[in-house]
Length: 259
Image (cartoon, rainbow, N blue to C red; front, side, top):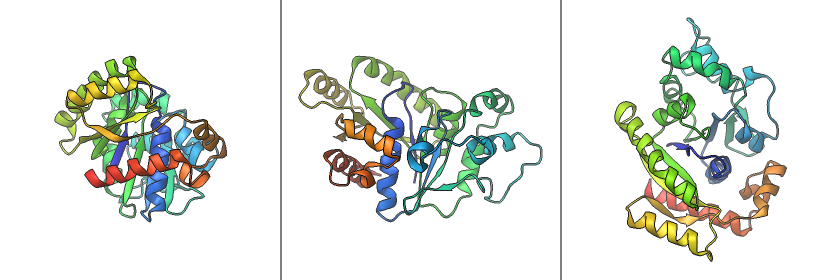
């Protein structure tokens, strides 16, 4: 299964949710690859403990080589040398790099929007692929949506996020119609959810009434998430018995049940 985590609004927890669900997936015995397309490189840092200075060890090399007349790899080897094993069994990551930004105009002008999907489809030794995206609908986000089967939308429960949600859903539907008829929205994930506060409850209730695919499992705010970032350990490894870890496990189980 290929899952993309996307929201055009920043700060909604895309990277944290991507990496924690991927880590649970790997801990359940499935070979898992995380692909980071956000030039900030936070997924790679979270999972391997560093941001790589050499762009040739990151997804930037894949896109740079896709601009070549004679790409360096074929037959499923496009990602060779840029996949990094994390300290966690069955969990690998392709990190991002700041060089993605200057590459984007050239990639768009050369119509390389399908290259990521083509390369992923030639991978045969991963059970699941999790794709983290930048907080904007740009070339890399569209590439990810074209490559994925399921789009998951992290959502922080405020009015600004709600207003942005409608245009986001429209954008995903446009990609589905134009480029990837297998794509579906797998669910909206309520993050930083304060269950005792009136506004988050009201917003989620209204989204549910409008028929949006809101997932029942929500993630509470907690300082332990920042601690796990600093330790470069997803919650299933950093604090297996914590309440937040249980929430992530519940979210994972719900997604498994509906996929």
